[in-house]
Amino acid sequence: MRDPDAARRGYDGPTRPDNDAGPPAVTCSNDKELFGVFGDRDRFDANVGDRRFDEVLDGECVTVGVRSPGLGIPNRTSVADDETGVCAVWGEAFVPAGRSQTPAAWLLDAFAERGTDALADLNGSYLAVVEHDGEAIVATDPVRSWACYYTDEPGVRVFGTDATAVARTMVDPVRDRQAIGEFLHLGVVLGEKTAFEDLHRAPVDAYLTASDVTTLDRFVHEPREFDYVDELADRLERAMTRRSHYPGTKGMMLSAGYDSRLLLSQIPDIDVAFTVGHPQAQETQGARDLAHQYDTRHVAFEPSRRYIEPTDEKVQYSQGIKESLHIHHAGYDDEVGVDTMYHGLLCDTFLTGHFLKQDYVHGFGKRLPLPRLDPDPDPVEALLDKFGYVEGGSTALAEQVGIAADDPHGFVREAVGREVEKARARADDIQNVIDVAGISNQPSIPFRRHLFDNYLESFFVLDTALIDWHLSAPPEHRNTKTFLDACRQLDPDILENRPPDRPHDSHTLNQIELFARRTLPLLDPFESAWPDRRDIYERNDMDEHLFPNTQRLHDLPVRHKLRVNDVVDWTAMAAGTERRTPYWLVPPGTV
Image (tube, rainbow, N blue to C red; front, side, top):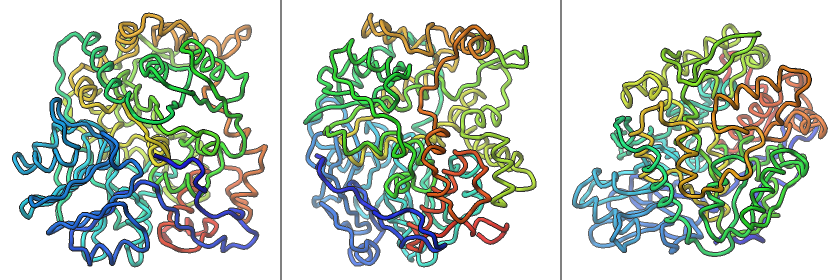
């Protein structure tokens, strides 16, 4: 379990001194990591640097190291090493009912019998390395909830969970201008790219070998008819029960929304719930009411500079492909002090159709939602709405950093369009195509990566049975009504305290009231669920802190400035070079 008194890692001085060179490069180290090579122990030692691991498995054609304080805790990271081969399962994993083996021991046996078909029966959120009879693979879970980074540049395929560590094995990494452009404009690097040209990610639902990449078919939409509400309620209950027995003090990240209240109602011994927000904010008060309803202590963290500041640790968890902004809670880590942490991340994505395109009519200069899905959506525009793309901000950004300066909107449309085409093999309905492309490029994963590294974190919505429900339920049934009907079966009082911005069961009615409150002068608008990042940024003079020598960036939107800082800092950290103000972003062709 986590040592709550462990010193935080990283550079302790100012992030930006007055000179251009910046502080020396920083090497952060994750508390939990899987790192390996398709090669022998000598190859492993030559690429691992000075990092240490709790277990190192020496196979015939793969060597893998695992570092995790959770080794030995049921359903967490585990290893197996016997005369038949080696196996490491990193993350949170569950074996089929009736089997008492650890996930690694079970997978080693099952792989020997059935090869990669065995992966379909391993439940959870994991990365798996297994070798048997001269065959070795590294496999993601069905939705790639853990990215597997790899490079062949050292002359042998090196792979791992920490993009920084894998990048450090490259002799002279070259920044990937396409990937960096996607990150700056969208907030996420799409597909299998990273911020470096020769550093890649395994695709969604795939496995690596020493020289190839192969996709699987565990994440394919196949809609069918069944009792959507009853099945969802049953599967939710089983998924949370599986994850309710972790040791130590238990906490959860609590919003006033639907997903976190479900956990609070079903996990019986949560000791404390945490919310980042002003004490009098609607979201904080709603979360406090929920905690009181379920007899749980509530702690609210006042938003301050530490909420928005992109520290070394936050930047590393972004892995250079997603925004550190999503790690809302990281600045308050020293005040948390629990062992196990629950959260409802991606519940809306898999169960209530976050990426699905709602139909609208236009009136009064606004879009008014209709109670149905768009029958003929533009999948690219639908995804741009959900990713962190703001056309005006991207136009200003392109002018300053020189990436896609001629046509930033065309740049992002083309990039997202490629992801849509890749998703078509996993769905035959356009709404499900949108869904696959969105899930394959989910922006908010750094939130989870930080929690996992610092606590025994549990990701209940990635239970295999819930993923199967998501793939089996037609898109028109993956909505808030279905989800709330299932939640009421588990707890009839779950909506005793409603979310402040969702007073109705109906998504459409909530959107209509949201529109009315924004438009009509006599009604107060709903407050944002998150603290005002622009206000925090400006109050703490973050421009002078982050970009003292780059005045041209000061007029950009806050979110774009934070993205620039993320990618500049992460590439310096991963390449082991000095941090510099972002002159390398311009002119075009210099990256």
